[in-house]
Length: 189
Image: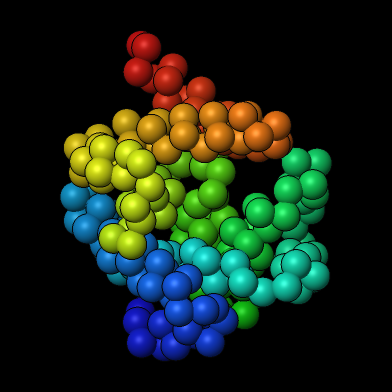
């Protein structure tokens, strides 16, 4: 992986705050990859690129998604906050030429999660919550869980996200619910 190249790509696509976040997610992803015996280079790449489309215009996001052959489901159509992850995965594949489905999926599902996630997907989902610039209430608990039991960390993050969306009467993507249900059912058995 040409780390400096991908960092220069994202630096040109986002503001300083988002760039720092992306670098921090990549750092956390590497540490989590080492902890959970995953490919650290792939984790770093997915971490760097996970928000590559976050600050582009919504019409451009939709164009990338459409050009990439992705058909949005009903929740995605009405929830533009989810588009950056989908567009980012297509951008990585179709523009940057990254030919790794696991990296593609780690970027695509970093906001919602989904059932049957790979370890790389779980790492990027979790790393997005624990970058060193994050300072929300509970971040230290999330960081501790991330390096103890990644699924406990994911559950903590999903509980926060699903609760927040429900309180604000916003749609909850079925993938987030499927991920939540899968983790809770594993813990019950």
